[in-house]
Length: 166
Image 1 (cartoon, helix red, strand yellow):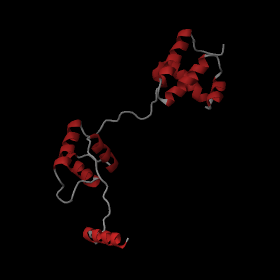
Image 2 (cartoon, one colour):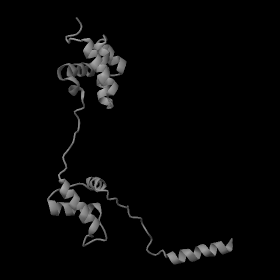
Image 3 (cartoon, one colour):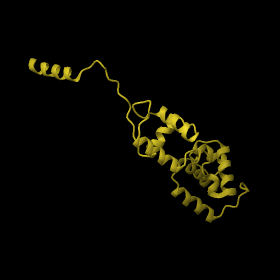
Image 4 (cartoon, helix red, strand yellow):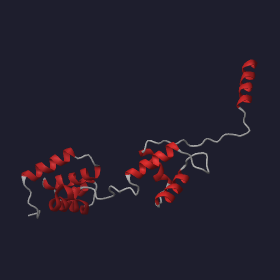
């Protein structure tokens, strides 16, 4: 007997159904390995067929038969809880929308990081701040470099002179 797992027609149907419905690539690849294995191919052959090592197939099969579909789900990452509560995020959005910092012309990531650290005692990176602002539907514009010596009036006169020459 090549398999220590009891493979029934119900298991085959269940795996086919999960495979048909699954959207995530990692889980789908694991389900594919299990599906090919339960349909009679050796783990080593399944690995060669799907371009993976035998160990990948063995882990997928073992996970499926011990934990079911939950064993094949991706275990990386996850839902990380925000340090700021929903109320604190709303308050932050209200502060940014309705006030201006004392020592600057407007809000930027660095100022918001300092304000959150002072007000809530939490440390965030600027990238995370911009993600939080996006969640609050607050957009920001990157500053454009403008030549302080450049005069809009002189540019208009210059454009009119060029039109006269043509």
